[in-house]
Length: 290
Image 1 (tube, helix red, strand yellow):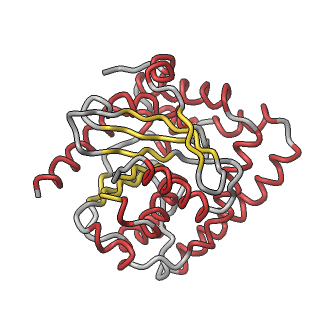
Image 2 (cartoon, rainbow, N blue to C red; image 1 turned 90 degrees about the vertical axis):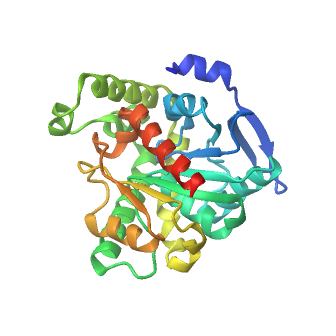
């Protein structure tokens, strides 16, 4: 089923949940009575869950689906993870966490802190917060986080349109490899970012990235209960994280399945949502039979 952004917003309007601490979470939910599986989509640095509209609509055919915007009044990832867990618990759900980029880190934090509400993990073009990462991986992440700290300061003073254009720019060499369909989706993703990304939302996402070192120290035993229920997507043309960072995530997770079939750089799952959804469904259905 092909879903436009307009139909997505019309069919699944935002609902509101308020945590015990008074934090408001805006989320979209699809309840599929034919499935006992719930997929929760966690967005990356763009911070706007509407970017999942095609993926959400595709999954809605076979699963219940949940997504949200990160609450901007919480700046620590542990607080955000706890608030999301409170939402999931209030709905009486256990979920598969599907996290892209920053959302992959959030998924790991939720799974570590609240394992009883998590069935499995699907992490896309993200990295690890493991205790035993190689020095190269620690150095790469440290440099990335330092860059994001600088970017956060730039966001405070630079015109928001300049920032949006910088964020939506695609490397010409990578763009030259796009299929016509990928190019259309890349342009649509850029337009969505231009239309909806606010300076406040971007600053919040960058703050979440800068906060990540507080979650260092994850161990394989933190995820042992998800044996056989971890799928990792690494796009071969994604340069956001180093090979050492990806290896650290593979080593952290229990017997993960690694899929390197999606191309299109860091945003590959958005450029080929049908293939992404197909691979995720194959994995979940296989694991459910195991």
